[in-house]
Figure 1 (cartoon, rainbow, N blue to C red):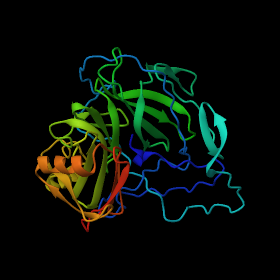
Figure 2: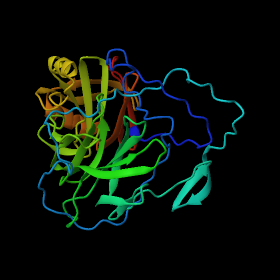
Figure 3: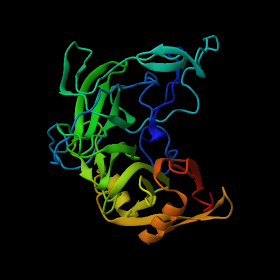
Length: 366
């Protein structure tokens, strides 16, 4: 599970800041890796509840339940929404602040919550989703929901995408990714699948152009690019190379058109890798508003190598030698999982060593 896209929990009574929509998406001027905000109504806490999963099916890749009319990947007609540095309407200072992080005072729906939070069951694995119009979804909610993210919609609602970590041993169930669509009041209006018949989709990550990368955590697994809105088919990307037990993805686009994608692998010698698409392809894709070639075309793959100078500090570099990267992972950062990039710093976790690595991407130190 990658925590990088989980929204921060806030009390519903805390005044929201209304984000300002930018007129056009200019990756050279937008803050890199900033969170995507759908609207001021986006709930900060959207739990999903799972039932026990049963067995699985053979793998027959069918990317989406929804028909498509074009192979090009153009997931959203609306640019990403970023928060303004100042709220458009100044919040009143008289609102009571009731959210107290870590003060576990409420038990609700099987959860123990901090003071000021509430929970609501919106979907249950193996059951159809109840919709605000009184009906139910055509598809049943997927088994073993895992890595997730939120994407804005044109009507100020949002889509909550969630992986299905169904393994090949879970006979009768299919992996992939499901999407819950909400209106601007936080009500569920649809549920649909955007990726089907894959295996053990664990974590993932966003792209700068608002698609969801879903990682298979199985031997020979792939990294799929999916459309949260269900309009375009999924693609197998080159981010994962020849395959692996992949966990999560993060990106650094500070030096556009050079964009680096960082991928963790949950094995003893799982080398954290950096995939860099061809900058010329990136520029052409942005000019054409068709992002599908960026991660499906050839790029450069490198592997993280760290050198310890003390028990907690050292230097690192990126090598094109996969064996060198795997040796370094085995020695220093086995079973890497959650990953994120913020302000030129790369954060990832080695679960075996129970360590958080913080890499300064510009200085080459950690």
